[in-house]
Figure 1 (tube, rainbow, N blue to C red):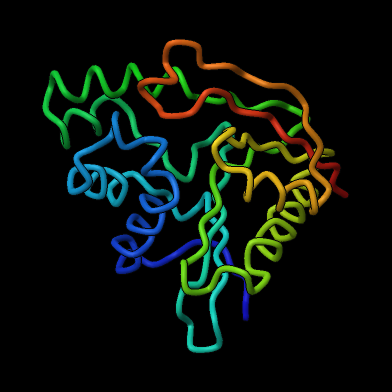
Figure 2 (cartoon, rainbow, N blue to C red):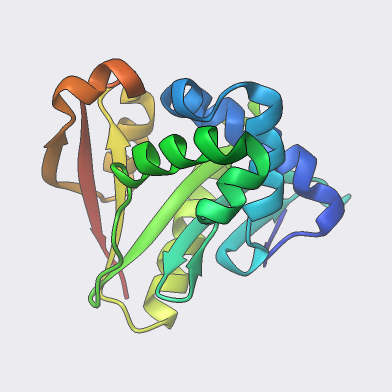
Length: 193
């Protein structure tokens, strides 16, 4: 298996589908319907903000995204939203998603999602991708890696804790839990370097 930066344009549909499978439960009420969400994701995913793992045949097994001051793995703005959802649909969706937005910090590198193909889970790919993003963070001069994990994903949280992440705070959604389908997100932090 090999780790590399980025992905090819022809991989966008598969990566968008994997992303939707991983995060669709959380984002589905806002970004749905699925077909439009996939179109939006394919359009805005930035390979410069992604690290991929592939098998010896070059097939994608998983990906970890990150966010910097220059952009994010899944970015996009109001114009991208309105192009895929229309003026009204794009405007309210952009507003709702802005409520989940996480800002970058000077001392913590921000991980922006991790996905592993369902058929490849349990094979250490998530762990390898976490190690790769930690190396990326250290190589950029950061002392810590940061991510958020939602309360309805205990399996992911357990993986993060096994990999040295510790809780750094909790953010409750309040009434927005009915929109996004989870009650809170915990910021997890791991020392790197």
